Amino acid sequence: MSELVTGEAVVLGLRPARLPSRGLAIAVDVAVAWSVYIAVSMLLVSATSSMDSAAVAAVSVAAFLLVQVGIPIVIETLSHGRSLGKVICGLRVVREDGGPIRFRHALVRGAMGAIEIVLTMGVVAAIASLVSARGRRVGDVFAGTLVIRERMPAAEVGAALPPPPPWLVAELGALDLSRVPDAWWLTLRQYLARMGQLDAQVGAAMAGRLAEDLRRFTGVPVPAGVHPAAYLAAVAGERQGRESRRAFGAASASHGVYAPPFEPSGAPAGAAPGASWSSPSLPSSPPSSGPAPSSGPSAGPVSPGPSASVASGPAVPSESRPPRTGFAPPR
Image (cartoon, rainbow, N blue to C red; front, side):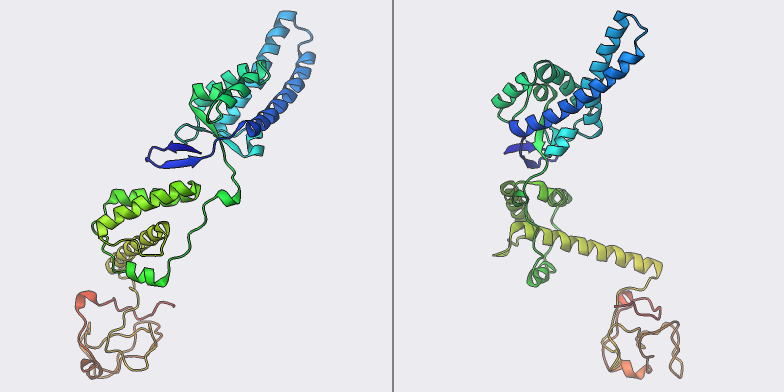
């Protein structure tokens, strides 16, 4: 296991590729490169038949450098560290901090690879990989890169978190999150986004630290029997739900959009849940002698009159009254 620290101070548990898998990937890349070089050389023989020997030698050297060095550098740069052999073996070249490589990293690796792989038939690269603790060859040391295993067995990948139980959701509804800083929420979001890529032990340790920080902010510890990662995911979902309700509620009040169903205590007996019903105790216009027709399609009965609601319950404050649009949203 290699502990790499990203720019967000997140410890990544990455598994470096060892000599057998790297040797197989290099063998595939070298075989493809030599096949392409032989095909290009055969084309150059017929194309340079009229040139002198010096020109033919220069073209041959240029073709060798292009196929053996230039093309691998371009492929690794565009694919972010994945050549054909590495794709087959499930490997990838990354920086020492776990980020994707750039052109300068691929250039240094390709230049050193022409010496330690092509010219020495891979002997220098094999010895360096055996000596290095993380299986790096000389080109990786100079470029500051590392070859990791991109595909791992299913047993080594972190399991998906189970959904929070209903009683936990009910408790989180009364949790005070006002003292939790924004920086902590950002750290939690980054952890949850990369949780599936972390090693099991590293992820559990980070979840414990984040849960302890949350306890200091809220004063509520993790409930017994609940995994810290599952608790953190439930807290993040609760906070997102609160922000969504606050944002959508403000939008509906400012644009006159129908708010979520609101049923006053003075609703007539037998009214369907969620039906469009306007409380007569809060009229928007002077009451008429008879029942007023609805302003739009309605899923419930029309109000019977002012006298039916005065005795049935207290008046609802005007600031909490929903807009009277005349329809009920589908349930």
